[in-house]
Image 1 (cartoon, one colour):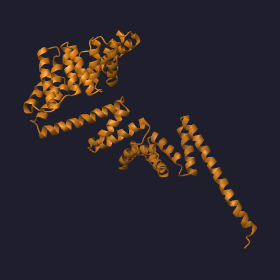
Image 2 (tube, rainbow, N blue to C red):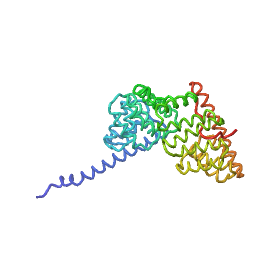
Image 3 (spheres, rainbow, N blue to C red):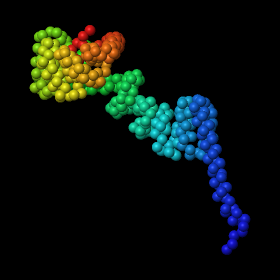
Image 4 (cartoon, rainbow, N blue to C red):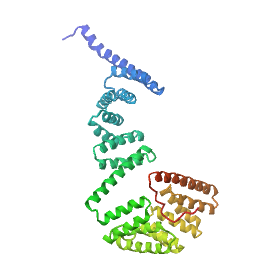
Length: 394
């Protein structure tokens, strides 16, 4: 059967016409996208929004344009508009983690229960640290508001890793941890108010408050109730030394508690470091070297073992070997002024004047910063604990 020529013409021409139409539409979309991106670079959000709206008019499922419209609306605080655009972007392209993160934030502000799902799902996959912190803080706020601080803790720990110097993150972390600590202490006080663990908890609170005599008293009460209570002999030995390092009877009492700690809990890097500290206080350098070396063997990552071993080697006039351990001590505890001070001494003995000046400067900076922190704690009627290890000197 033969078809009329006119029909054949239509059959041939329509696909070409359709293709040309598509090409023209794609070119128009591309032009609007280029204009929008230029507007964003020049911070002209109004123009960028108009260009992206033109793209959406031509291609309603364009995920890039929808995403950008959502971001622009979010920046203007228009969460309802932003949520619609971000949902459209995710509908076209579910892998847009950033869109899901912003959607979760908007949903939280709008009181939408879907917020938790979108925030949790996006938090793990975000590459942008700043946005990830924001999403994490929103999640912490949700769990905190639900009375589930336990769910907030792992998120908070990750946020502190991502933003260790962000004041908002640090403030929220300390408030969360303090509330959990207070809650558990209250439960302990209700369930076992006369227990050895309660006495230990009171002692630890008094240590943080700077009341060493009170802490020692409660540690002793805990041991009267349970002589084998794990960790208490060691903590009591620490408190005794901190109360009066230069007093020989106090050092002897601390050694007795360390011996009991070894029998109760076994040997450890902490125990060996404390024995090394007592040996240093008694000017027994070979014994101190033995104890700190054993502490380092038991735990090479121990800041106390690294610092103590470096200090003893410095006293034994082995600055090159000492410097190796002191550098490790600074790496493990960058804010320990004693570690920087001793490293400066080692550098000076080795003729490394530039390095010595740098470490001496850091020592002064850290001490000034800690003095400021101490003043803040005094305002709160608290006191910071001194650093572990022997007095670093002037």
